[in-house]
Image 1 (tube, rainbow, N blue to C red):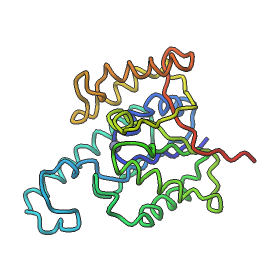
Image 2: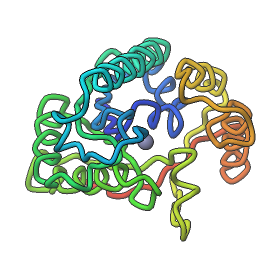
Image 3: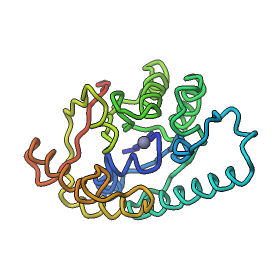
Length: 236
Ligand SMILES: [Zn+2]
């Protein structure tokens, strides 16, 4: 099975489906991850928009590049732990993807779909608080128009610290994957994102990752689970 994960930011995929990734790779599925936005610049304390980036002092630009580099290193380490071989980073501006023409994002995704030929796509959820997550979701749906390469299944994962903070809460999981054997690996993979992991009660804490897996397990009759919303399935 070919799996393509279209994530807005490095760590989204681990928070939402780290256990499922480990499960897919252990079953010898081919997993590819593409990260659309940098995951860093949204935290800058500057008023300049991404379009005015050339006016930003060189020193600050260098610091961002360093932070982006570090995050990508962590993402690569985490992917290695989860045995994912194909990882690709794009440079869309963090927390500003709503300022980009959707078609630009769609074109990138279309190209990746042509290469990966996925049977199943996992992507962010439309109801998340983070604007990049919404844009990536929308662009994925456009890229997956049934007239294009017909991707049979599209599922959305939740991202802890974004999905549950998007009010009104509208993540409606109807697809659950048993990750009992992979929960430890998921937590380890998330702990590799040293600048993203937090202490409980933050949603991006090891403790909460465990709670959420148990919670979805209790919904689905497994000891630990990840939850997904099935967006579309084409049954031939
Ligand atoms: Zn994100």
